[in-house]
Image 1 (cartoon, rainbow, N blue to C red):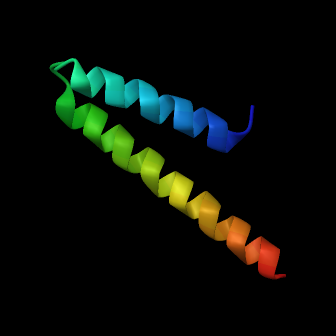
Image 2 (image 1 turned 180 degrees about the horizontal axis):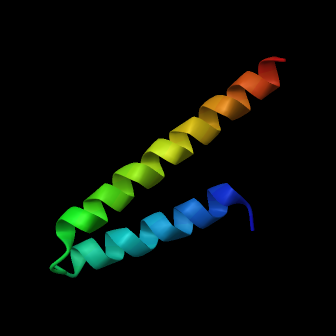
Amino acid sequence: MSRTEFLRQERDRILKQLSQGTENKAKLLTSLMDIDAEMEQLRQSGKNFAKS
């Protein structure tokens, strides 16, 4: 499983937890932001690699 696939699955899991109204919303939202940032970084590095 690639890192991107893992991040997508983790992101889906967190979104499901948020939709269920769990108590740790701040922690989950922080994790979601971290995942989104890492996915964006991977996309950027992929674009830069393709340009080389």
